[in-house]
Structure formats: structure tokens, C-alpha cells
Length: 75
Image (cartoon, rainbow, N blue to C red; front, side, top):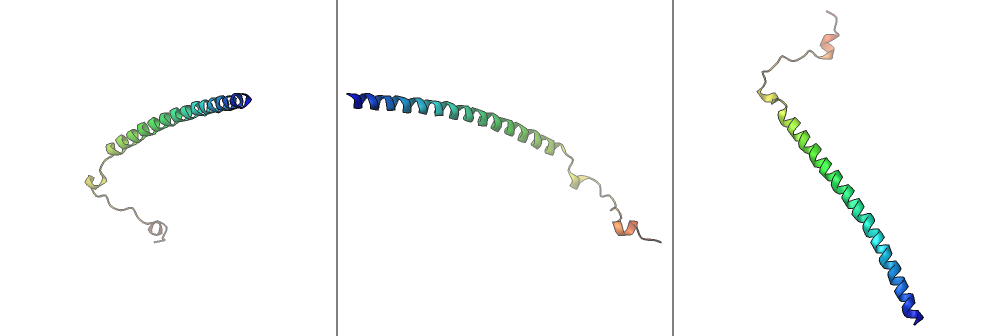
């Protein structure tokens, strides 16, 4: 009879430990999901920002700036 009660106690302790681990894992999963949602929101904001930038290929061609060597040569 003591063997059964020992096994039962061990099973209860194991079950209790597994429930504790499950709660921790569920909390971690919740935190990761929140971080993932935040990342998706930031990605969406970044994509909107990039789309709102002007298309450089459609802007008029400006003359090039002089090189550093041209700026500092003595004439």
C-alpha cells in the first residue's frame, strides 16, 4: 500500500510541477505574442514611411557636387 501512495505522491508532485511549467510557458508565450504584434506594427509604420518618401528617379537631375579634391585645390 505504501508503494501506491508513494507513486501517487510522486505523480501529484509531477503534475503540480508540470502545471507550474505550463503557467510559465503560457506567460512567456503571451509576452512573445505581444512583442510580435509590436514588431508587426512597427514594420507597418516603417513601410508606410518608406512608401511616403519621394521617388528619387522621378526628381529632376541636379548637378553633382564637387569632389573633396576639387574643393581644396589651389587655383
